[in-house]
Image (cartoon, rainbow, N blue to C red; front, side):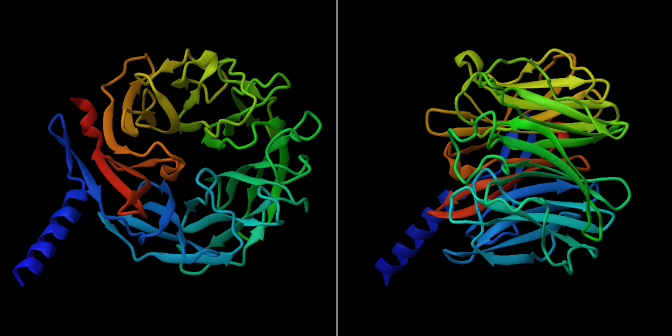
Amino acid sequence: MVIKSLRIIGILCLLLSCKEAAQKFNGETINIIESPALIGSAQPFLYSNGTHLYMSWTQKINDTLHSINFSSLHNGSWSKPIEIVRGYNWFVNWADFPAIIENKGNLLTHFLQKSDTATFAYDIHLKISKNYGKDWNKDFIIHTDSTKTEHGFVTLLPNKNDSFFITWLDGRNTGGGTHGDEHSSSGAMNLRAATVMLDGNVINDELIDAKTCDCCQTSAAITPKGPIIVYRDRTDKEVRDIYISRLLDGSWTIPKPIFNDNWIIKGCPVNGPKAATYKNTLAVAWFTSAHMFSKVNLVFSNNSGATFNKPIHIDNGNALGRVDIALLDEDNALVSWMETTETGAALKIIKVNKNGTKGKPILVSKLSASRATGFPQFELLNDTIYLAWNDIENEKRIIKIKSLGVNIFNQ
């Protein structure tokens, strides 16, 4: 009995040692938040509407069956998770994953389903709920082509009235199902955008750019002047810098670079930009490794993306990218990113003023540098920052969530 008891105590000690303690930074606490997702979940996506925080994720049920689930955080408590949909033959990927957004009680989410046996042949399926996620309509495909090619890297945003704005990468011209040489000037990945109405009708489906990087995430924001899209472009000379297009007076502007990094790379870096807006201020964060120097940059625009200030280099070296961004006000942004360390990687967040003043980077967590970590997300709810990412604990996938107050940056 004594030996058995000692073994139990040893196991408990081992388990407790794996539990990460709350961190302190300048007297402020970085808290660990219990996740509403079950073990085996991954690909968290966060969205805040100012009163509630929504999180969607994928749940692996077995080797062929997956589901999308979501929960909302209100007054510090997660709601009971709701399964939106489950299905077979989904494309479940570390970099291209479902999202969820809310607009006046209406929810929109998407998932990716294989359309062919080719590795990168999948379609974008949308689902809408008109009652905060209690009931969902039958899924429908956003794109109108029937090609067995790649369609993904979706950005969803609430739009005016009850509609939703969507942008995505569309492979209808690539000819098929793989990344590589077939994405030539006559068969490149496209960038498209559309408006999704509450009844499921898709309007204003337009081509924005006929040649983009194949597998970098898109991002978008709704400014006072209308929607903008930022994404990684691809020129005939393999320059893959971040571009912007704006919807002005009913027409999309000719895409242009937000800054000329001149990053020449013959392959997709799988590292897209993130954009945020506050009144007329637009901020964009992105990763680049131009001239063999990896870094994360941040740039501000005072006029909704018509022009941009000089980029601000925010990391201290060894950047991996996988950025996220939010604006606190017209002058200050929060940016998160990953960078490599001697033992793996670190997730950091920093406050940056548009005049170039930077706060001290805050270490949110140590984590793996592998694809298993995915793309960490963060959102603001009132004066609290919530961050979520994939993690492996006891050889099982989990979703880690932490929170910290914005006052942590006032020290």
